[in-house]
Length: 125
Image (cartoon, rainbow, N blue to C red; front, top):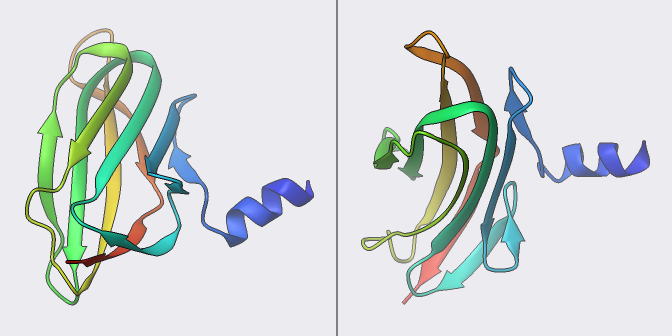
């Protein structure tokens, strides 16, 4: 119980409305962390769904700008591991990144969803 409460306090968690596994990391850091990074950040994702994953989206927000989708992939697989590098990070500004997952329904269309806690990353030159 203490470990679960600690994870919530550190934001090392995600939300899902099905038994979806979602793990998002950047180097030694995981979803929910606030940190500085030298160079371009690479997000490593692991997703395991109960149905095929229809869409994985990476969203980035910088300062008070409206967050935007910076990467989308439609793997159509139940298990996905991928790495994505932000080729144009906002150097010197804190940005947040989060991942959104949509499963495909067996009968077609979109089904269950999952959202990772954001990572707040300040990229240094």
